[in-house]
Image (cartoon, rainbow, N blue to C red; front, side):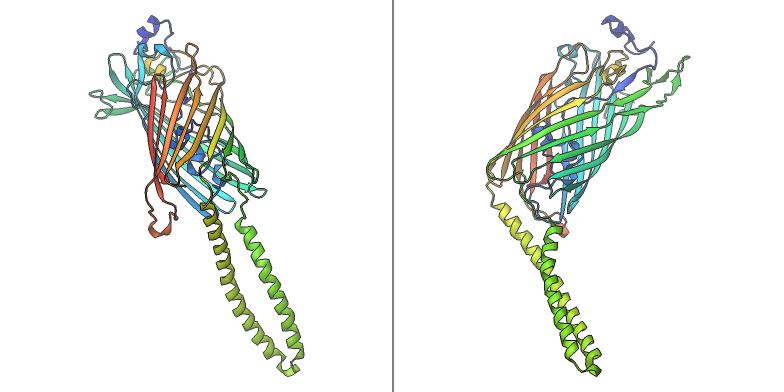
Length: 473
Protein backbone atom coordinates (compact mmCIF):
# COMPACT_ATOMS: atom_id res chain seq x y z
CA UNK A 1 0.00 0.00 0.00
CA UNK A 2 2.76 2.44 0.93
CA UNK A 3 6.24 2.99 -0.49
CA UNK A 4 8.79 0.40 0.65
CA UNK A 5 6.32 -1.53 2.79
CA UNK A 6 7.50 -4.71 1.11
CA UNK A 7 11.13 -3.83 1.95
CA UNK A 8 10.16 -3.31 5.59
CA UNK A 9 8.65 -6.79 5.78
CA UNK A 10 11.66 -8.30 4.04
CA UNK A 11 14.12 -7.06 6.69
CA UNK A 12 11.74 -7.93 9.58
CA UNK A 13 11.22 -4.26 10.52
CA UNK A 14 7.46 -3.65 10.71
CA UNK A 15 5.87 -1.19 8.33
CA UNK A 16 4.24 2.00 9.56
CA UNK A 17 0.49 1.43 9.37
CA UNK A 18 -0.91 4.39 11.33
CA UNK A 19 0.07 7.77 12.77
CA UNK A 20 0.64 6.45 16.27
CA UNK A 21 4.36 7.29 16.29
CA UNK A 22 6.69 10.26 16.46
CA UNK A 23 9.64 11.63 14.50
CA UNK A 24 12.92 11.82 16.47
CA UNK A 25 14.80 14.98 15.44
CA UNK A 26 17.98 14.04 17.29
CA UNK A 27 21.18 15.28 15.67
CA UNK A 28 24.28 13.28 16.54
CA UNK A 29 27.12 14.85 14.51
CA UNK A 30 28.31 18.36 15.41
CA UNK A 31 27.23 20.56 12.47
CA UNK A 32 26.97 24.03 14.04
CA UNK A 33 29.70 26.71 14.01
CA UNK A 34 33.08 25.73 12.57
CA UNK A 35 35.03 26.59 15.75
CA UNK A 36 32.72 24.31 17.72
CA UNK A 37 33.22 21.56 15.11
CA UNK A 38 37.00 21.96 15.18
CA UNK A 39 37.07 21.54 18.97
CA UNK A 40 34.95 18.40 18.94
CA UNK A 41 31.86 20.20 20.24
CA UNK A 42 33.42 20.67 23.71
CA UNK A 43 32.56 24.37 23.88
CA UNK A 44 30.04 24.81 26.69
CA UNK A 45 32.52 26.15 29.28
CA UNK A 46 34.40 28.47 26.88
CA UNK A 47 31.32 29.74 24.99
CA UNK A 48 33.02 32.84 23.53
CA UNK A 49 31.60 35.12 20.83
CA UNK A 50 28.41 34.50 18.89
CA UNK A 51 29.14 30.82 18.11
CA UNK A 52 29.01 30.19 21.85
CA UNK A 53 25.22 30.49 21.63
CA UNK A 54 25.12 26.94 20.22
CA UNK A 55 26.74 25.58 23.40
CA UNK A 56 25.60 27.70 26.36
CA UNK A 57 22.75 30.16 26.98
CA UNK A 58 25.10 32.21 29.21
CA UNK A 59 27.39 32.84 26.24
CA UNK A 60 26.20 36.43 25.49
CA UNK A 61 27.77 37.65 28.76
CA UNK A 62 31.16 35.97 28.16
CA UNK A 63 33.87 38.55 27.51
CA UNK A 64 37.06 37.33 25.89
CA UNK A 65 40.24 37.95 27.96
CA UNK A 66 41.23 40.91 25.76
CA UNK A 67 37.74 42.50 25.63
CA UNK A 68 38.05 45.70 27.68
CA UNK A 69 35.61 48.17 26.14
CA UNK A 70 32.06 48.86 27.24
CA UNK A 71 30.65 47.67 23.92
CA UNK A 72 31.49 44.65 21.80
CA UNK A 73 29.96 43.41 18.55
CA UNK A 74 30.60 40.05 16.90
CA UNK A 75 29.27 38.62 13.64
CA UNK A 76 29.65 35.00 12.58
CA UNK A 77 28.88 33.34 9.27
CA UNK A 78 29.69 29.78 8.28
CA UNK A 79 28.99 26.89 5.93
CA UNK A 80 29.35 23.15 6.51
CA UNK A 81 29.02 20.17 4.19
CA UNK A 82 28.22 17.03 6.20
CA UNK A 83 27.17 15.43 2.91
CA UNK A 84 30.62 15.85 1.38
CA UNK A 85 30.59 12.16 0.49
CA UNK A 86 27.32 10.89 -0.95
CA UNK A 87 25.69 8.30 1.26
CA UNK A 88 27.04 9.61 4.59
CA UNK A 89 25.62 7.69 7.55
CA UNK A 90 24.18 10.84 9.11
CA UNK A 91 21.99 9.00 11.64
CA UNK A 92 24.73 6.51 12.68
CA UNK A 93 22.81 3.42 11.63
CA UNK A 94 25.93 1.24 11.70
CA UNK A 95 27.80 -0.87 9.18
CA UNK A 96 24.56 -2.09 7.59
CA UNK A 97 23.43 1.43 6.66
CA UNK A 98 24.34 0.92 2.97
CA UNK A 99 21.72 -1.81 2.68
CA UNK A 100 18.90 0.30 4.13
CA UNK A 101 16.16 1.40 1.71
CA UNK A 102 16.77 5.11 2.43
CA UNK A 103 20.02 7.01 3.05
CA UNK A 104 21.03 10.62 3.58
CA UNK A 105 22.84 12.52 0.84
CA UNK A 106 23.43 16.10 -0.37
CA UNK A 107 23.60 17.50 3.17
CA UNK A 108 24.59 21.15 3.70
CA UNK A 109 24.25 23.68 6.52
CA UNK A 110 24.91 27.38 6.94
CA UNK A 111 24.73 29.63 9.97
CA UNK A 112 24.59 33.37 10.65
CA UNK A 113 24.81 35.06 14.04
CA UNK A 114 25.06 38.43 15.78
CA UNK A 115 26.19 39.21 19.32
CA UNK A 116 25.97 42.57 21.10
CA UNK A 117 27.55 43.22 24.49
CA UNK A 118 27.23 46.30 26.69
CA UNK A 119 28.92 46.29 30.06
CA UNK A 120 27.92 43.13 31.96
CA UNK A 121 24.97 42.43 29.64
CA UNK A 122 24.83 40.66 26.31
CA UNK A 123 22.42 39.33 23.71
CA UNK A 124 22.97 36.83 20.90
CA UNK A 125 20.79 35.47 18.12
CA UNK A 126 21.90 32.82 15.61
CA UNK A 127 20.15 31.21 12.66
CA UNK A 128 21.16 27.99 10.98
CA UNK A 129 19.66 25.68 8.39
CA UNK A 130 20.31 21.99 7.73
CA UNK A 131 19.24 20.79 4.28
CA UNK A 132 19.55 17.11 3.39
CA UNK A 133 18.41 14.94 0.55
CA UNK A 134 17.34 11.33 1.08
CA UNK A 135 18.23 8.71 -1.50
CA UNK A 136 16.06 5.62 -1.84
CA UNK A 137 16.84 2.20 -3.30
CA UNK A 138 17.72 2.45 -6.96
CA UNK A 139 19.37 5.87 -6.55
CA UNK A 140 16.13 7.86 -6.63
CA UNK A 141 16.34 11.08 -4.59
CA UNK A 142 12.81 12.45 -4.24
CA UNK A 143 12.77 13.59 -0.60
CA UNK A 144 14.45 16.56 1.09
CA UNK A 145 14.42 17.52 4.75
CA UNK A 146 15.01 21.11 5.87
CA UNK A 147 15.52 22.05 9.54
CA UNK A 148 15.63 25.78 10.32
CA UNK A 149 16.66 26.85 13.81
CA UNK A 150 16.68 30.27 15.46
CA UNK A 151 18.35 30.39 18.86
CA UNK A 152 18.71 33.44 21.09
CA UNK A 153 19.70 34.34 24.64
CA UNK A 154 20.09 37.24 27.03
CA UNK A 155 22.74 36.99 29.73
CA UNK A 156 24.50 38.99 32.41
CA UNK A 157 27.61 38.65 34.55
CA UNK A 158 27.75 39.02 38.32
CA UNK A 159 30.32 38.96 41.12
CA UNK A 160 32.98 40.95 39.23
CA UNK A 161 32.48 39.01 35.98
CA UNK A 162 32.99 35.65 37.67
CA UNK A 163 29.46 34.22 37.54
CA UNK A 164 27.34 34.37 34.39
CA UNK A 165 23.68 33.48 33.90
CA UNK A 166 21.67 33.33 30.70
CA UNK A 167 18.16 32.48 29.55
CA UNK A 168 16.88 32.09 26.02
CA UNK A 169 14.80 30.27 23.47
CA UNK A 170 15.25 27.92 20.55
CA UNK A 171 12.79 27.46 17.72
CA UNK A 172 12.82 24.64 15.20
CA UNK A 173 10.99 24.61 11.88
CA UNK A 174 10.93 21.17 10.23
CA UNK A 175 9.95 20.73 6.59
CA UNK A 176 9.87 17.44 4.72
CA UNK A 177 9.41 17.91 0.99
CA UNK A 178 8.73 15.50 -1.86
CA UNK A 179 10.30 16.32 -5.21
CA UNK A 180 8.04 15.61 -8.14
CA UNK A 181 8.68 15.73 -11.87
CA UNK A 182 12.10 14.41 -12.85
CA UNK A 183 12.98 13.47 -9.23
CA UNK A 184 15.88 15.88 -9.20
CA UNK A 185 16.29 17.72 -5.89
CA UNK A 186 17.63 20.74 -7.75
CA UNK A 187 15.34 20.99 -10.73
CA UNK A 188 12.18 19.23 -9.56
CA UNK A 189 9.05 20.72 -8.05
CA UNK A 190 8.72 20.26 -4.28
CA UNK A 191 5.53 19.35 -2.44
CA UNK A 192 5.59 19.79 1.33
CA UNK A 193 4.67 16.62 3.24
CA UNK A 194 5.32 17.95 6.76
CA UNK A 195 5.80 21.55 7.87
CA UNK A 196 5.76 22.27 11.59
CA UNK A 197 7.35 24.75 13.97
CA UNK A 198 7.91 24.59 17.72
CA UNK A 199 9.73 26.50 20.44
CA UNK A 200 11.49 25.67 23.68
CA UNK A 201 13.58 27.34 26.38
CA UNK A 202 17.20 27.12 27.44
CA UNK A 203 19.21 28.15 30.50
CA UNK A 204 22.95 28.43 31.05
CA UNK A 205 25.54 29.22 33.71
CA UNK A 206 29.32 29.74 33.58
CA UNK A 207 31.74 30.10 36.47
CA UNK A 208 35.04 31.77 35.55
CA UNK A 209 37.00 32.43 38.78
CA UNK A 210 39.15 35.52 38.64
CA UNK A 211 42.85 34.99 37.79
CA UNK A 212 42.46 31.17 37.74
CA UNK A 213 43.08 29.31 34.45
CA UNK A 214 39.84 27.32 34.24
CA UNK A 215 36.09 27.64 33.69
CA UNK A 216 33.05 25.51 34.38
CA UNK A 217 29.86 25.70 32.34
CA UNK A 218 26.47 24.03 32.17
CA UNK A 219 23.38 24.47 30.04
CA UNK A 220 19.88 22.98 29.85
CA UNK A 221 17.69 22.90 26.75
CA UNK A 222 14.06 21.89 27.21
CA UNK A 223 12.30 19.21 25.19
CA UNK A 224 10.42 20.49 22.18
CA UNK A 225 7.35 18.52 21.05
CA UNK A 226 5.18 19.55 18.10
CA UNK A 227 1.77 17.96 17.61
CA UNK A 228 -1.32 18.37 15.38
CA UNK A 229 0.46 17.37 12.18
CA UNK A 230 -2.00 17.43 9.30
CA UNK A 231 -1.71 15.69 5.95
CA UNK A 232 -3.44 15.90 2.59
CA UNK A 233 -5.76 12.95 3.31
CA UNK A 234 -6.46 10.54 6.14
CA UNK A 235 -7.09 6.86 6.77
CA UNK A 236 -10.32 5.53 8.33
CA UNK A 237 -8.63 5.53 11.76
CA UNK A 238 -7.77 9.21 11.40
CA UNK A 239 -4.10 8.69 10.53
CA UNK A 240 -2.73 11.53 8.42
CA UNK A 241 -1.31 10.83 4.95
CA UNK A 242 0.73 12.95 2.55
CA UNK A 243 2.85 11.98 -0.44
CA UNK A 244 1.83 8.31 -0.11
CA UNK A 245 3.30 8.25 3.41
CA UNK A 246 1.62 8.02 6.80
CA UNK A 247 2.64 11.05 8.84
CA UNK A 248 3.67 10.95 12.52
CA UNK A 249 1.38 12.49 15.10
CA UNK A 250 4.25 14.44 16.70
CA UNK A 251 7.83 15.62 16.24
CA UNK A 252 10.32 15.58 19.13
CA UNK A 253 13.51 17.59 19.64
CA UNK A 254 14.85 15.89 22.81
CA UNK A 255 15.93 17.75 25.93
CA UNK A 256 19.67 18.24 26.48
CA UNK A 257 21.91 18.83 29.47
CA UNK A 258 25.57 19.68 28.89
CA UNK A 259 28.32 20.17 31.47
CA UNK A 260 31.87 21.16 30.56
CA UNK A 261 35.18 22.61 31.66
CA UNK A 262 37.99 24.64 30.07
CA UNK A 263 41.62 24.75 31.22
CA UNK A 264 44.32 27.05 29.83
CA UNK A 265 47.99 26.10 30.09
CA UNK A 266 50.35 29.00 29.51
CA UNK A 267 51.01 32.56 30.63
CA UNK A 268 48.02 34.20 28.96
CA UNK A 269 45.21 34.48 31.55
CA UNK A 270 41.90 32.82 30.72
CA UNK A 271 39.94 34.90 33.27
CA UNK A 272 41.98 38.08 33.85
CA UNK A 273 40.79 40.65 36.40
CA UNK A 274 38.60 42.98 34.37
CA UNK A 275 37.81 46.45 35.65
CA UNK A 276 34.26 46.93 34.50
CA UNK A 277 33.34 50.23 32.90
CA UNK A 278 30.87 51.00 35.68
CA UNK A 279 33.50 50.38 38.38
CA UNK A 280 36.13 52.37 36.49
CA UNK A 281 33.77 55.31 35.96
CA UNK A 282 32.78 55.22 39.63
CA UNK A 283 36.43 55.40 40.69
CA UNK A 284 37.22 58.31 38.35
CA UNK A 285 34.07 60.22 39.28
CA UNK A 286 34.76 59.78 42.99
CA UNK A 287 38.03 61.71 42.54
CA UNK A 288 36.30 64.54 40.66
CA UNK A 289 33.44 64.58 43.17
CA UNK A 290 35.94 65.28 45.94
CA UNK A 291 37.27 68.23 43.93
CA UNK A 292 33.72 69.55 43.43
CA UNK A 293 32.95 69.25 47.12
CA UNK A 294 36.10 71.21 47.97
CA UNK A 295 35.13 73.92 45.48
CA UNK A 296 31.60 74.09 46.91
CA UNK A 297 33.07 74.74 50.36
CA UNK A 298 35.23 77.53 48.90
CA UNK A 299 32.22 79.02 47.09
CA UNK A 300 30.22 79.15 50.32
CA UNK A 301 33.06 80.97 52.07
CA UNK A 302 33.46 83.43 49.18
CA UNK A 303 29.73 84.24 49.16
CA UNK A 304 29.77 84.76 52.93
CA UNK A 305 32.65 87.25 52.66
CA UNK A 306 30.93 89.32 49.97
CA UNK A 307 28.85 92.38 50.97
CA UNK A 308 25.23 91.45 51.40
CA UNK A 309 24.14 93.54 48.41
CA UNK A 310 26.64 91.71 46.15
CA UNK A 311 26.06 88.15 47.32
CA UNK A 312 23.43 87.25 44.70
CA UNK A 313 25.66 88.49 41.88
CA UNK A 314 28.64 86.59 43.33
CA UNK A 315 26.53 83.43 43.65
CA UNK A 316 25.39 83.58 39.99
CA UNK A 317 28.95 84.16 38.84
CA UNK A 318 30.20 81.17 40.81
CA UNK A 319 27.40 78.99 39.40
CA UNK A 320 28.41 79.90 35.84
CA UNK A 321 32.08 79.19 36.66
CA UNK A 322 31.15 75.81 38.21
CA UNK A 323 29.02 74.86 35.20
CA UNK A 324 31.93 75.59 32.88
CA UNK A 325 34.33 73.60 35.06
CA UNK A 326 32.00 70.62 35.26
CA UNK A 327 31.60 70.54 31.46
CA UNK A 328 35.38 70.47 31.12
CA UNK A 329 35.60 67.76 33.78
CA UNK A 330 33.04 65.56 31.99
CA UNK A 331 35.23 65.67 28.89
CA UNK A 332 38.26 64.87 31.03
CA UNK A 333 36.48 61.93 32.66
CA UNK A 334 35.65 60.47 29.23
CA UNK A 335 39.23 60.89 28.00
CA UNK A 336 40.63 59.34 31.16
CA UNK A 337 38.39 56.26 30.95
CA UNK A 338 39.07 55.84 27.22
CA UNK A 339 42.82 56.16 27.82
CA UNK A 340 42.71 53.55 30.57
CA UNK A 341 40.81 51.10 28.36
CA UNK A 342 43.24 51.64 25.47
CA UNK A 343 46.17 51.00 27.78
CA UNK A 344 44.50 47.86 29.12
CA UNK A 345 43.85 46.59 25.59
CA UNK A 346 47.44 47.35 24.55
CA UNK A 347 48.68 45.41 27.57
CA UNK A 348 46.44 42.47 26.64
CA UNK A 349 47.96 42.50 23.13
CA UNK A 350 51.37 41.83 24.71
CA UNK A 351 50.26 38.67 26.49
CA UNK A 352 52.11 35.52 25.52
CA UNK A 353 49.65 33.80 23.12
CA UNK A 354 51.58 30.52 22.92
CA UNK A 355 49.18 28.74 25.24
CA UNK A 356 47.25 25.46 25.13
CA UNK A 357 43.52 25.58 25.80
CA UNK A 358 42.01 22.22 26.80
CA UNK A 359 38.27 21.57 26.77
CA UNK A 360 35.98 18.73 27.88
CA UNK A 361 32.23 18.31 28.10
CA UNK A 362 29.52 15.70 28.50
CA UNK A 363 26.25 16.07 26.60
CA UNK A 364 23.22 14.08 27.79
CA UNK A 365 20.25 13.85 25.40
CA UNK A 366 16.81 12.68 26.46
CA UNK A 367 14.64 10.00 24.87
CA UNK A 368 11.91 10.25 22.22
CA UNK A 369 9.64 7.27 22.97
CA UNK A 370 7.76 5.52 20.17
CA UNK A 371 9.61 7.45 17.46
CA UNK A 372 11.50 6.75 14.23
CA UNK A 373 14.30 8.56 12.41
CA UNK A 374 13.86 10.68 9.31
CA UNK A 375 15.17 8.00 6.93
CA UNK A 376 12.82 5.37 8.35
CA UNK A 377 9.88 7.74 8.04
CA UNK A 378 10.69 8.13 4.34
CA UNK A 379 10.93 4.34 3.96
CA UNK A 380 7.81 3.89 6.16
CA UNK A 381 9.63 1.54 8.56
CA UNK A 382 8.85 1.46 12.26
CA UNK A 383 12.48 1.07 13.44
CA UNK A 384 12.56 2.58 16.94
CA UNK A 385 14.77 5.64 17.41
CA UNK A 386 15.47 7.38 20.71
CA UNK A 387 14.02 4.90 23.19
CA UNK A 388 16.75 5.68 25.72
CA UNK A 389 18.70 8.65 27.08
CA UNK A 390 22.14 8.83 25.41
CA UNK A 391 25.47 10.41 26.30
CA UNK A 392 28.24 12.05 24.27
CA UNK A 393 31.74 12.69 25.64
CA UNK A 394 33.65 15.52 23.94
CA UNK A 395 37.28 16.68 24.11
CA UNK A 396 39.06 19.55 22.35
CA UNK A 397 42.15 21.76 22.30
CA UNK A 398 43.24 25.07 20.77
CA UNK A 399 46.59 26.83 20.44
CA UNK A 400 48.11 29.66 18.41
CA UNK A 401 50.97 28.18 16.39
CA UNK A 402 51.99 31.39 14.57
CA UNK A 403 51.67 34.43 16.83
CA UNK A 404 48.84 36.71 15.74
CA UNK A 405 48.41 34.81 12.46
CA UNK A 406 47.41 31.14 12.74
CA UNK A 407 45.39 29.22 15.35
CA UNK A 408 45.17 25.44 15.33
CA UNK A 409 42.50 23.37 17.08
CA UNK A 410 41.38 19.76 17.20
CA UNK A 411 39.22 17.36 19.14
CA UNK A 412 37.28 14.14 19.34
CA UNK A 413 33.81 13.18 20.44
CA UNK A 414 31.75 10.04 20.85
CA UNK A 415 28.52 10.17 18.88
CA UNK A 416 25.82 8.03 20.50
CA UNK A 417 23.33 6.01 18.51
CA UNK A 418 19.56 6.19 18.77
CA UNK A 419 19.05 2.66 17.36
CA UNK A 420 19.23 -0.73 19.09
CA UNK A 421 21.10 -2.40 16.23
CA UNK A 422 23.91 0.19 16.07
CA UNK A 423 26.69 1.39 18.38
CA UNK A 424 28.40 4.71 19.26
CA UNK A 425 31.16 5.92 16.93
CA UNK A 426 34.19 8.12 17.48
CA UNK A 427 34.72 11.38 15.55
CA UNK A 428 38.04 13.17 15.07
CA UNK A 429 38.02 16.88 14.27
CA UNK A 430 40.53 19.51 13.14
CA UNK A 431 40.32 23.25 12.54
CA UNK A 432 42.32 26.43 11.98
CA UNK A 433 41.97 30.23 11.94
CA UNK A 434 43.99 32.29 9.45
CA UNK A 435 44.17 36.08 9.87
CA UNK A 436 43.19 38.05 6.76
CA UNK A 437 42.82 41.86 6.89
CA UNK A 438 41.07 44.73 8.67
CA UNK A 439 37.70 45.85 7.36
CA UNK A 440 35.79 48.42 9.41
CA UNK A 441 33.37 50.50 7.32
CA UNK A 442 31.66 53.27 9.30
CA UNK A 443 33.53 52.06 12.37
CA UNK A 444 30.95 49.37 13.26
CA UNK A 445 33.19 46.27 13.22
CA UNK A 446 35.97 47.40 15.55
CA UNK A 447 39.73 47.28 15.07
CA UNK A 448 40.20 43.50 15.08
CA UNK A 449 41.16 41.95 11.72
CA UNK A 450 38.97 39.43 9.92
CA UNK A 451 39.85 35.76 9.61
CA UNK A 452 39.10 32.64 7.57
CA UNK A 453 38.16 29.60 9.64
CA UNK A 454 38.32 26.01 8.38
CA UNK A 455 37.23 22.77 10.07
CA UNK A 456 36.81 19.07 9.30
CA UNK A 457 35.09 16.14 11.05
CA UNK A 458 35.97 12.53 10.17
CA UNK A 459 34.30 9.35 11.43
CA UNK A 460 33.41 5.93 10.03
CA UNK A 461 30.89 6.42 7.22
CA UNK A 462 30.91 10.20 7.76
CA UNK A 463 32.88 13.27 6.67
CA UNK A 464 32.12 16.97 7.16
CA UNK A 465 34.07 20.08 6.18
CA UNK A 466 33.31 23.68 7.07
CA UNK A 467 34.46 27.25 6.58
CA UNK A 468 33.49 30.55 8.19
CA UNK A 469 34.35 34.24 8.23
CA UNK A 470 34.59 36.38 11.36
CA UNK A 471 36.94 38.42 13.55
CA UNK A 472 40.44 37.20 14.49
CA UNK A 473 40.68 37.42 18.27
